[in-house]
Length: 345
Image (cartoon, rainbow, N blue to C red):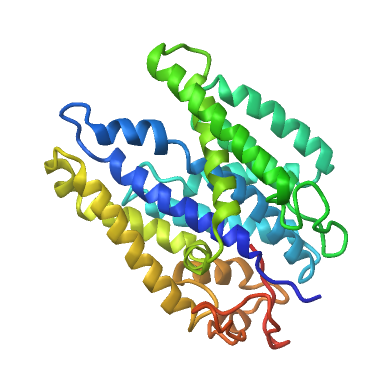
């Protein structure tokens, strides 16, 4: 069965990584007083990107589990190892960034996604919607992350041929056609109204959380509607782990500059320069290798020692996928040699 990566998932994940880098840099700035940048960040960017990432984490969980079934009789055991490796990477990353999310994501994956993967899709969707309603009234971000994990898991497409482009969520679970436009418009209007309400008469009851969630939906759907040339975002999305760790490392390294800048300009410059450098590096790296540096370590430790995942079989990283002449990144949908293991998500 010839499977490949879903390009829109990679592109949307790369888009989310760009926003997360900007918000993470802004959150480290020492504020002497409110500025126009703070207003823009609070009302247009903060809490608008991690929901995309959480949803895609749940969707990618399902895609990896499905791919693992083609290679092993115990796919959930392999997934458990994958989450354990992610937890170990997160524990090491805490030394750099105490507020990192890799370890909590791995733990939630074990506690929430693994058991949920045994349930029917309808049950996962129902529970996810229930937790989402609760998350709107709970300011703790991990309640919302749990809900989006479950919704992403429920939205993931089935094996090829069972769920086609005609289904509501589209062939890749991200939707398409007129429905995507309707969702984008409705989410944008709700986000604008709720944000105005929160600024002019700050109520309780989760108005800010609802505004942020609607903003995330509006941004994600707008990106899927208008983005046509997404090779840069695809490259960023395929190396999310590497980009996340290097991004926080850069923020920690330039922390004195962020603290010394009263205007906030350093935040924007740092985010733009870092993302641009990551985009160039990702496209250069993926033109020569199949996985990013940390992605390869994650994959190698996940499969090492399994019956079909010896160290030798997972050590090769050379890129042999046929190149798309319109992109610097090889096209994952084109045929690859039969001796290369398949991987998704």
